[in-house]
Figure 1 (cartoon, rainbow, N blue to C red):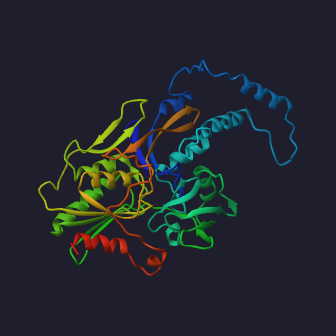
Figure 2: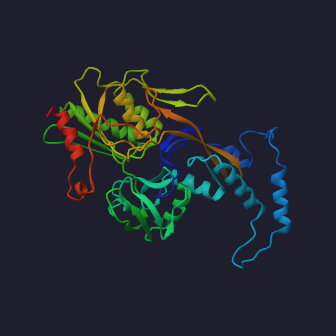
Figure 3: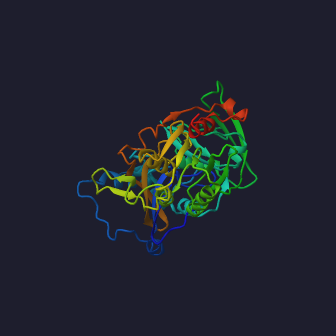
Length: 411
């Protein structure tokens, strides 16, 4: 799904992994490629000097005491290699920061991660994230095995194949959920409207990430359903806007429900179709560690002299790039948001090589909307709040879309 542009690309998804293969939520992410480092087995920073105010004597004492005294008591267990001990130490250091999106990846996991974000997906097709320490489904992808099995945005995953998820990170959950096409995974879920946990089995499959569909309704409203911000989504979006112009409609409904994100550049480009040059789309706030970076409209502004009325549908499955685009258009007074609060994933990660194939993904900033609000602070609040219940899904009703259409038609 991701193509690295030169040595740097911005990728906006939700947590660290997409459960259909590992992607990254899998959140708002910034990946920096470093092929030279990977080839030489070195690191990005040359010679590394130990911090003068950190005494590592305890660490090396513990290392030596374990090596000299540990006795293996279970025949099924094995003494970790020096490399495994080193990776365990780095993992512990990373986890001490308490951020689910700051993650150490040993070489094998890092390779899987790279393959997955490049488009090699086998799994169930859903984005995972953490909310209040709980493992949740951000969104199942459209027409994915997860969606077809009945998994919904906001479902809390209590157990995977009988293994409780208490204390389980997104990465660990993905390792359990992902698997070969044709195999089953059983998940125990808690849904807001359910009195009892739900047990849903999903058959893993090859996942094709959908991007966009668009059509004109009989009442004249033109609907664009955007499912992800992929490498080719901007061109597809441009084509949909062309079809919108040709349809003669002036009422646009952009559906971002269940859209977990994708490329930041795609979100900025799409916002640029509606905004004048220089308008702020989103800002990266480094909290004083460096100057904030403002991502601004490229100024396509194709609706400048047109009578456009626009509504955007959002829900708790709208995350990262979706929140960036929705927030930019809402706060620049281009569109009204209708639905429920968005997921609230607004941090920026940078992927750095540690050498030898290992990678460290570090949260380095947070996303701020044009008015300075942190997306992570509870997500975006819709202008018109409308719920869609489980009964609505079962009965094929969509009160959120109905409300958006009524607003567009002035009813």
